[in-house]
Image 1 (cartoon, rainbow, N blue to C red):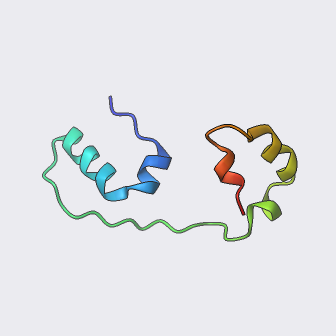
Image 2 (cartoon, rainbow, N blue to C red; image 1 turned 180 degrees about the horizontal axis):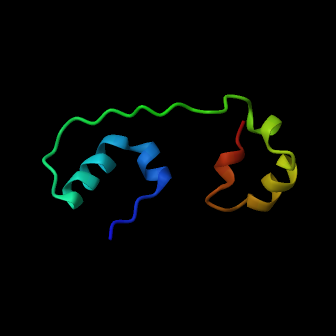
Length: 68
């Protein structure tokens, strides 16, 4: 079992890719990501309860998600 977290994959795609290939016992090779950000609007426009959520997550590891 290998736990993969989106945040880790996003922040360091190559390192996480290498870790996944090692776990699968697959020969290391260059990996290319083909993902695109689906929504480019500011989070304040997307999240209806932005201010409430920002307050709720203040002081947690998630508070940086609300920095504009």
